[in-house]
Image (cartoon, rainbow, N blue to C red; front, side):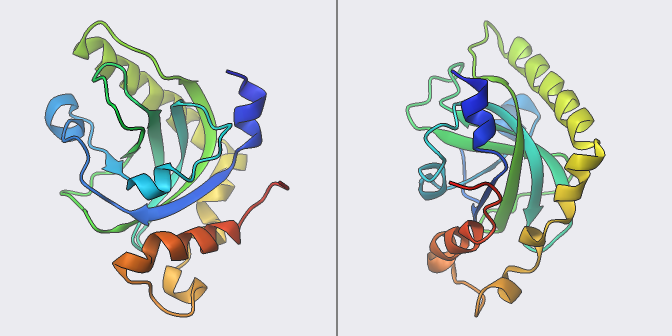
Length: 182
């Protein structure tokens, strides 16, 4: 894995509807996650390696919050499908399946790894949250929380997308906000 290749993919903008995941985040780990459908995961850049990332998140048209995210197969659980599991650093008080989740992925923390126990996994996640919190408190990162990407999606597109149109419409919107030359 080459860190420079990963960093060339960032910032990365993505958007999609929140789907049910494996049901482990809140129940087993005490760390709730929001999950993207495979159609969003499949659009990640090829050079964006599996691992732990941080950035900003918005649910529907609400406030923007810090987030930490696992991209990969989660070896502790031996997943067979690649996933994007986002922990938003905010208490929403419940599930928000079907909501629109928008992310700006800004930084990379560490590669995906296996753990010998669930306690070691939870400890690593808490450490990732601490690292993400510190990095996202830097002024150059705070600026991304105010990015126009987080404006009302209805004002970006000609009309509010339906659930079936969401991932396609969001992909067009995201591509409109590319900040690095390809």
